[in-house]
Length: 272
Ligand SMILES: [Zn+2]
Image (cartoon, rainbow, N blue to C red; front, side, top):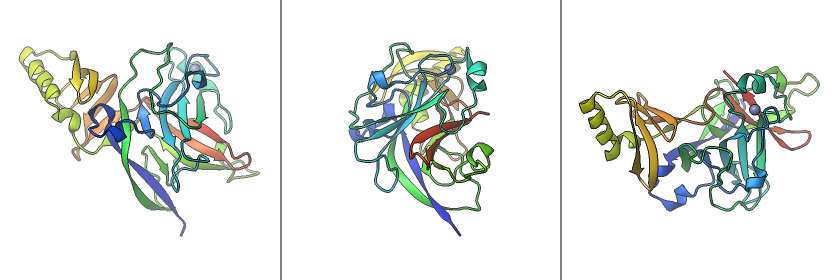
């Protein structure tokens, strides 16, 4: 029976990273892209606005082959709410790049890139502080998580199984709307508890404040004991005791594919 190796990230909220190595990770989701030259930031082929950065993966032997060490792959998707219907009407056929684009950068430098046309402050980002590997049976349903490898969620889609060449597209990685942090670190931060106390005392429904958290500042809105938003990214607690943080993807699954004919990467977005 054929098995596929899935590479599952262990996430850490960037603001809370104690380890500098993790804070400067080139495997990350949300916030600002790290190491991307500004001139390489792609625009939407439909609305012409800058695309929203979703996440990035770096080359790693045995996990993701980008041709060599120092190369980083960036994924972008149109999240323009004013033109969403129109933009998403464009069929994102395999190899097409209307509203979802992938950018490869060699020798990426470890600094964040901000786009002058987008919000000055990007949302919260999570970085990879480690990986777990898991062999997956082809009979099991694919896991709906952000990761590299494993069974893809797109396999039943007819776009990726063209009749003349059903295995032309190979799924390499996927991004989903949420990532789960292993611990309730957000809620355990004293600043959050303070906000929560204040909320209870004043009976305010929503408290909004810029606070110092870990190594930086964050705009935090508390919406209740178990949920809130940090730099615009919604979070809540999971039944298992982790923190579930929303990503810039908002909905659907963004899949990274390789076109086996051309050898090039392309993205496919399945909206919900
Ligand atoms: Zn667009």
